[in-house]
Structure formats: structure tokens, C-alpha cells
Amino acid sequence: MNSFTMMLAASEGGAPPNPIIPEITEVIWGSLSFLILFIVMAKYAYPAIKKTMEARTAKIQNDLDAADVARSDAEALRGEYDSKIAEAQAEASRIIEAARGEAEQVRQERLAAIEPEIADRKAQADSDIEAAKARALTDVRAQVTSLAVGAAEKVVQSSLDESAYTRLVDEYIESVGK
Image (cartoon, one colour):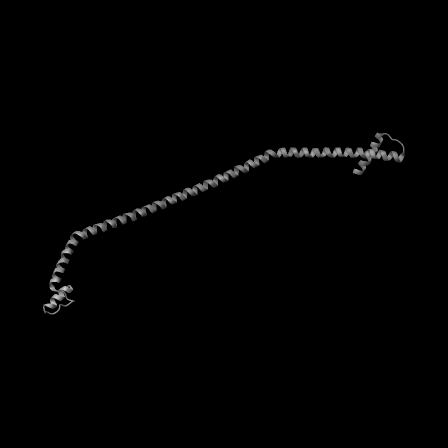
């Protein structure tokens, strides 16, 4: 009841209406309106809402199922990629080891090929050293011979022939060398 209705009832001289308890006509019209609205909602709105909710639930469930399938597919694909990566790494390691083996083999072959040349050069160097020693010894003998002849001439003051001096110096050098 509104305030206007309450003032009208009070001016007619009757008892003021109770603000807590509604009038019976309002209760009847309110109950009848609720019942009609409930029947309309139950017949038309509830099935449409239920159908929409079921469709939404089915769509969410389908999306969840598709996500599970996609996740399992992704895990399978990841496992496949991981195995391919492992295979590629193993292949790379095998290729590297093969290349190292080939490099070592080439190194050994080159060393084997160069060893005779090294031996030849070493032999040549040894023969050059021996020849240089022999030349040096010959030069030293010649110088010692000429020095000895010069010294002997001064000591003896006589001239001996060159072959005798050479023989004497050679014998002296041989005796000192032993």
C-alpha cells in the first residue's frame, strides 16, 4: 500500500491499515501474478536456459577433451623430437669421432712419409759434419805442419824437405790423438 492509500483510509474515519500485513486483494493479485509468471518461465524460459547451459557444458567438455588430445599429441611429438635430437647428437658425435680418426690417420701417414726424408737429411747432415771435421783436421794439420816446419827451421837452422816435415808432424799428431 502506498502513502496516498493510507491517508485516504485515515480520512474516511477508519482504523489505519497495518503496515506489516498487506491487504488480502494485494496478496491474491500478487500470488496470481507470481503463479502466471512461474508457469511462463517454467514452460518457455527454463527449457531454453537449460538447453543453453547444456550446450555450453558440452562445448566446454569438448574443448577440454580436445585440449587433452592436443596435449597428448604434443607430448608424443615432443618425445619424437627429443629422440630425433638424441639421434642427431649421436650422429654428430660419430661424425666427429670419424673425422678425428681420419685426421690421426692422415697425420700418421704424413709422419711415415716424411720419416725417410728426415732420415736422409740426418744422414746428409752427419756426412756434412764428418766432411767438415775432416776438412778442419786437414786444415789444422796443414797449419801445424807449416808452423812446425817454421819452428824446426829456426831451431835447426837447416832446411829439411817438406815431406819429411809432414811425416814427422803426422806421426806427432797421431801420437797425441791416441
